[in-house]
Image 1: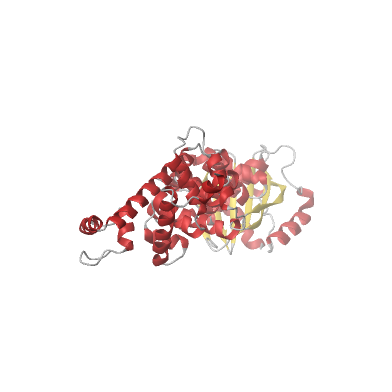
Image 2: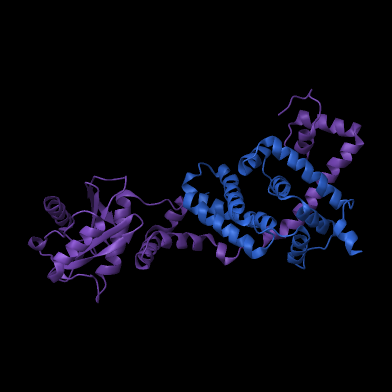
Length: 259
Length: 165
């Protein structure tokens, strides 16, 4: 900080108290203090006062941390805030917990974006709604025009459910959902065996505006995600279906020609 | 060690610093909570673990400045509150009580510098950066704070006690 020849100043005295001097400067300060009893008393007084302050405040840092400041709770609350509505939030939290809690905690809570966000949200939507026996969709198959108008208006661009009947899946209906980037939607299909698949659609922001199809792996879900022209898609099924890739290709082709 | 557990490690000292800033337990924990929520939002912007602690204290300082500063308490009241808040198990050394009383009587800008250096162990450059002031200002505030606190602990400046007698 200063060379050993320099006269001793206030900064050196503080540096001495706070242990911020190199050995040579430290010796110089010690010599100076030996020759200046008034300054020596001052420095000793600072040290004593600092020490009293540290002791007087030590208990505060040793108190148990209150629950309101529990980091795990705050992380959870933050996730819930970022994903309205609560049902989606709960599903996402559950997905994290079931999936890779430890890995995620160790990496820190980075925001999920791009196709990874699509995969997460599509999986959550499938978990919550496709398994709902009573009310999985807002608009049923007989209300397809209303459904198309609704999702088109909310997503801000023409979006319609592809026809997957040739592959054995009939449209059950769909609904608008929420992401932190705005509205998304989900179309639900069912085959003759009662197996359901969800096709999740959301506008992309910045990342992955166009992205090749890639598989999606949840603990109890499988599927594919892809993006085209600023729309992200996730096709999710509850079990590894033999023709899921083919079905995803079909949905992708249909969406392209339909939009 | 992950950033998240490093963040958790800092909570006790954030609570201590908040308590000395706000001098009221529930307000102090509210301040810490706000600070943690903000930190979680931007944790990915912290480049290294060494940057984390000064960064956290800077967030808390800025929150305090923008939202909490208006709730000033009179120093005498604050000093008594601090003493009352000390747990009964704390040895009632006269010197410790005097130190707390002296701390409460310091102007806020001096108190912050002294706490960050003497209690929280920050380097002068870190304190300057964290408070957004030149390092020369850090040093002059530290000098004034230490001289006043020393006078108080050594009993040369005790208006509160004198008025009680």
